[in-house]
Amino acid sequence: MTELNFVWYNTDQNTVDRIKPLVVADIIRYMTQEVIDDPSMLITHTVFLTDNMESGPVVHVWGQEDDNRFHCEYQSRVSWTTLDESAFNEPS
Image (cartoon, rainbow, N blue to C red):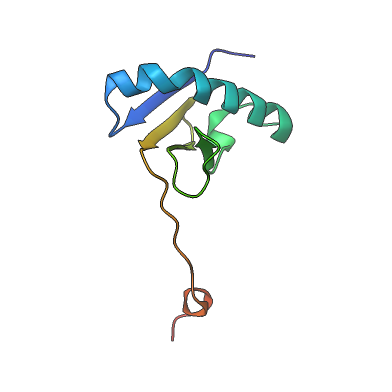
C-alpha cells in the first residue's frame, strides 16, 4: 500500500494530531473492505471516533478527482438530517 496523504479542513493541528491515527486505521480498513486503491475513488466516508453514532465526534472523508489525497473535516458532534419526499421529486 502506498503512503496515505490527508488534507484537513477547518480542523486545528492539535485535533489532527490526536485523531489522525484513528482516521488512518479506519481508512485502511475501509480501503481493504471496499477494494479502493486510490483516494479519488472515494465519494464519501464517515469515521465515527467514539461508539456514540447519534451525537459523537466524526471525521468526514472524501476524495477528489485526479487527487491522491484524502480530504478530511472534523466535527465535534455529528449532525443528522432527514430528507422528505420533496428532495426526490423532479423539478417542475
